[in-house]
View 1 (cartoon, one colour):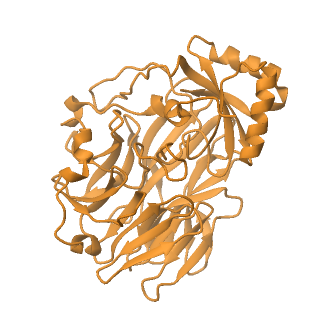
View 2 (cartoon, one colour):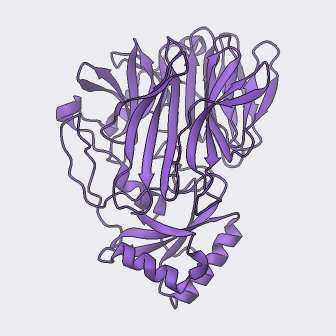
View 3 (cartoon, rainbow, N blue to C red):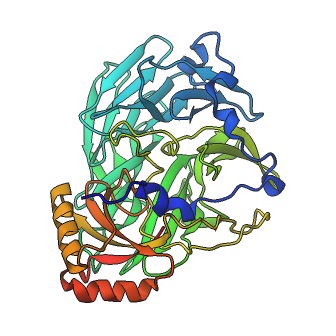
Length: 448
């Protein structure tokens, strides 16, 4: 059923990847810096076990410790590791990361005393430490917490009505805050939540309560990404806003929750960027280098961002094959459905919004996405229906959150029909819906 030889995951996300300007942000990212042999090896794993510095994943297969000066040291991982992602450190507790393997994943914990491998029943993500040494991570529809006292794990179900819970962080020894994917009442497409909020879970009462109260409706989507806790107890996170029917970039914003519970926007962000951590009180950001080399870490310094080299924290590798998908890379955490503009101008100013103008892929720069479908078989059946309506001339592919995370939420599938570069997207959408009225509320334009 898949009639494309090029991955739509790359095509559908190309137009929201930002350019990092050497003028505005110091030294431009260098993909050569990601080569493991260029990262000095640690004499031992002591630093990793102590949880010192900021740990990141470089190239999807190497862990590195990074400090605020850009000094980097490699951490040895399992010799047969497929892909390493989502690493977290805590001084005195250790380093934890996810081994992304074909099928189910594993969470690895390196403490001062030992190395613990916890095999998981599914896809694991976003480990985070508590002040007293507990570890929490996501399994998509639930959270798990590991205790350093007896090595036991306990599960936390998502709030009632949620479709996903991920990116958990401890705000105290007894409190977890996580991103919760919600279904927004009034959406035309009831199976796609289109909305994230932060929720708080109290380990003592075993109850969830809302932290933020963002709203979304119709084709306006909102995602919350990379929440992190500062030393003062405040939470910072990235908000991504998009409109699925408009050919323009999503907006990226930095927000925070004060220790007293106040929620406020800090500032707009110039491009797609996600929080990675804090070094010496300064924010460290994940920013894609836009050349295919993957994520780089940048630290705030006065009015500049200084490149600390390649690496990613709590976002997925873009240049490494996903073991579950063969050659298709697992990309960054899913963003809301958006339709970025196909041609944009880069600017060297850190206060502007520089992006790339992507080249058309096989002469196509946009598509019509149809979904959600509860199984790949249902999506394949839709492919046959669409082909019949277009007399076999449609160019289609089935995608999910692993191959196209910016447009498909976890646990469902969708079909993308690519449009020629000279097609009028809104006219094409109207034509599609007239041919297939059963998909009237299941179809919209995405940018390629």
